[in-house]
Length: 65
Image (cartoon, rainbow, N blue to C red; front, side, top):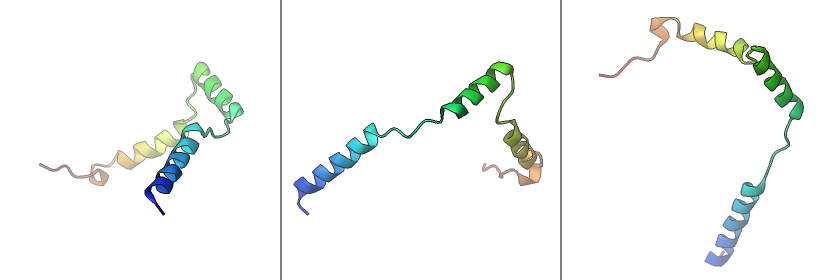
């Protein structure tokens, strides 16, 4: 493949990526916005799991000096 064809293909792929917009789930967005306005955090169920992982000093990564 010549340089011209290669560059044209790269340009086409870049253009496709630039203008690609995945479908938006508006109902999920609405639920998230309603939760924020009511003071609920939809991500709380995952936050507790992370806190437990780092609660123990031994499980934390060692610091380099």
